[in-house]
Amino acid sequence: MVGWTDSNWAQDLDNQHSIGGFVFKVAGSAILWSSKMQPTVATLSVEAEYMASLNTMKETIWLRTLLGELNFP
Image (cartoon, rainbow, N blue to C red; front, side, top):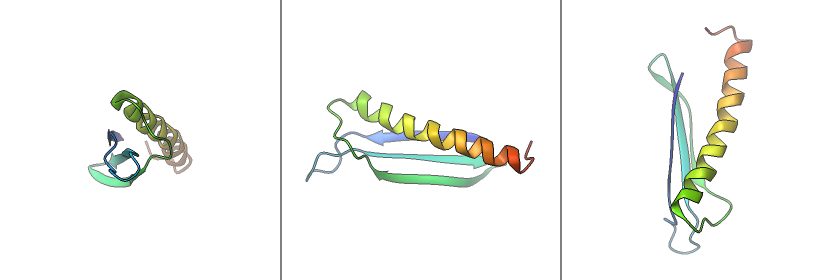
């Protein structure tokens, strides 16, 4: 399993919210991805990256648990 995450700081000009996203690949194929507006306004770009990373870690834990229950090596 390989995963990537990123965010773009204050991209929405109307409300200054950042957009965070992630993608996970297993055996070379994308199996889980997301891109959505973050619920909290980040005052720094590192804060937006931190929020995106936290969301990605939650999904990583869930996905590893799921793959383990499916006996995926």
